[in-house]
Picture (cartoon, rainbow, N blue to C red):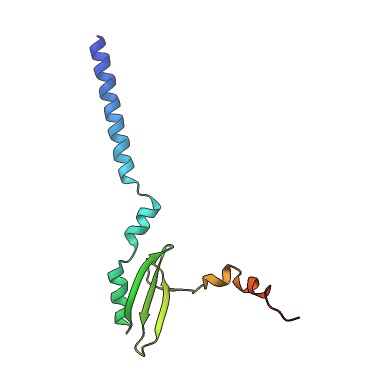
Length: 111
């Protein structure tokens, strides 16, 4: 009798754990879903070269692609691209957000 109860309990536990494991595999995290939808570096490079740019470097940084390239006139261009759509994102100069301009004003000798 004890063996039957022990076997039944073990079997029920194993089936329950298997069901939880299968359910966990079906659910993907938002970061994993976003990574699956992201364009590859090769796709980004192909898109830009199709527009006439020569790609020098592509990096995935802060959730966006940072691209250094040269246009048809030889001008160096840096752009940030949406990793899913490849659309150009607004450029934000990192130095202007750190207050360097304000700090430099303290040392001006205009007196």
